[in-house]
Image (tube, rainbow, N blue to C red):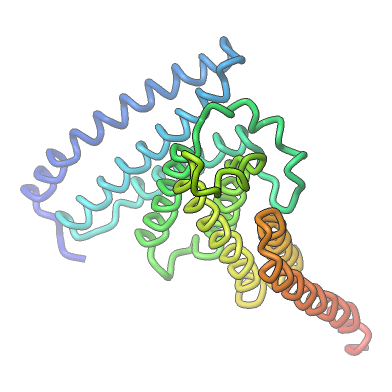
Length: 271
């Protein structure tokens, strides 16, 4: 690694000052928001929604700092990346607290939570979920393909997919896909995104199982995401896609059962 000159270091410090200031301001607003959640429980859902957006803004500032470090100093800023990762998880946790982290669950299990944010339209929900998706992609790209976090990001992607699904107003989803609905376009785009995210999460968990951990729980999570995808297809009346998801679940379950059976038989064969 090339030695960093004093001029380069000084230039870097000056370049990141505005972002450091922005970070301090966001932390101050976060402190106020957390206090408000305790004092004003009736408005807590909306505060958490705003806080989730604030944490994504915090994430963006850390990513810029890392970008400046790479451009000026020619090295990653590991502290900024780590703080950015924590900020992204904070945003995700806010949404999980808001709408739950359920994967393959009936809408009735978390419908009550969504009723608390019924006034938030599909467009805002879609924008927030897309922004979080960009952040997930940006973080993984910043760390690179050989990062120690590579397989832990599968969990991040899965939690993101689950909360994206749970943010959707499924009670009115079908009605809002009518072209005459004022929420038609964001709802259609949102549903399309959810289908993509759930399918990707399922495939990624199976990859993690086969290429990294060999833990059956990872494979089960993949199957759970297929179940969630099937629920969406069924709700939206996509019968052929729902049937394909069911067949894929059956195939994966059969593979999992065979792997479990083989694992149990291994000690006996060694004797």
